[in-house]
Image (tube, rainbow, N blue to C red; front, side):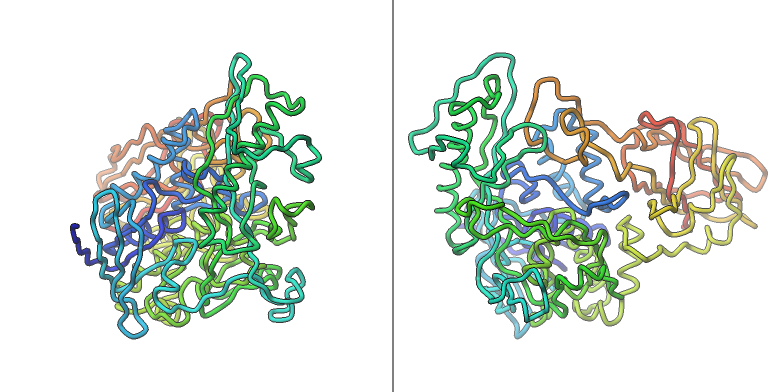
Length: 587
């Protein structure tokens, strides 16, 4: 067997959306990163192996941005047929070709070496290559969902539901218990042009009538993805996974047999496209950090001084009995959107160099029923990775970032297009002191530090493509090193076809005939130019982009100018181009 040693600044365990965002964020900000993932693909519950949607905050203009928006926009650009393997490739590319990032796929973390209250190294087995990987790092992050580093390191963690009285949570049970939300094996169907039979395996469970699936609507079109095929909350959601998977597969094939063969469900021309053999999990271990987020924190909007992410999904508390419980499978307890999540929930209380991100952050069961959805997890991951880059730079701990570098962390996240409710991004001196004008409309919102609509404030400038422009003029020639731009990706965008009245998802639930293609949001600016005015009064084009499909765009420049002008040339279909930020920065 081969042995390999990796020495990095930051090691992330778990390559779901939170781990991916943590690793990419830290690497982009200069840390040397290793990402250890026990599966052949990235994305966790969002990957082709499980195929759950990336869900997040409810409400107008509350869609999560940053890295999670970036990969979804890339998916829209490259994946018109919503092919799950192309989605996998988008996530793979984000990590595999990111400078400073070493990606270890098919590698399971099995051991940790400690130096007092610090993790010195971890050890992973990569079965595909018969290789043991040892990763030494100054900082680690557990984004594994099941919190695999907790039992390996002695980190404090919680499991199950807190008693109502412990934190005064009125949706918690009277007595504490170890029950959790369960896991699901999803499946998908495809419509064809002719009838297709289905012969179930002999081991499939039989559901002879609709009465045997009480409170489980089993439509198979639109946004129906069979999330309620759920078990495991009454037992051990980690160690019982293989047995639960077997039972869930029998149920999944049995439900499709019911739809096809036992009653009229309009499925004659539909066939089973895919069944997930890897269960998607909702809950297991949760770390204990310097703050434990509670139901009451969420209900009071989480206006923490150290907020670094936000949520906005309802407190969606699935019954631990899953399919064994005949009542409604979940209760949606209301939650405000957005609400803040504090940085102190993103690192371990007793392991000095351990970040946490994903569904395992420091929170109660009640709060986790909201924070567990993947867009929220991705924001927590990007926050943890950005904090790790600061901890690396300043040779400090996760707690040290909280004590000494919190504002820098928040400003870094805002600069990377992560919205932080109730906070503004700082504007650099060059843009702040310059004269900002436009050929039409008010350009001032472009430097107000808020890069999306909030309430009644649009925080944007709009112009006619090919006609209107916006520009900065400086009192003297200035050396411009780069430009930061935020375009409009339509944070309220909807899906296509049967999902046209619902928020756009990264993965389809099913594949009807004639499904419209996935497209780039029509509001995004597709083509634009940057022109510089030199001291002699001559304009010249210093950058032209003709196929932009991203929201956050950074254009490197090395020019000296007395003015800089941006002209949108085309959108992806909208009649007006809209920008939320345009900021030249010094070399």
